[in-house]
Image (cartoon, rainbow, N blue to C red; front, side, top):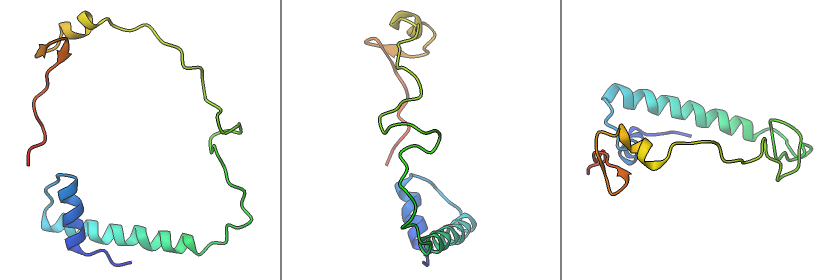
Length: 99
């Protein structure tokens, strides 16, 4: 599958990235290789392979690795004590996404 540089520019815009012309060409090539490999994997016959719910260990579909138990934590006042900016009980952070 051919990935055009225009498609790479579009993806970069969605991710709010600025890429150089060299990076765009490299990503176009890399993404094309990845999709070619995926096409090759699609050629494999997996009809005899049993579906898996967990790759790490055998267990039921709802099995978890550990119990979800609350752990000791900071209270709100302690957590905000070192914050450079705070207000109304929350951390204040600068805006990082601008369009």
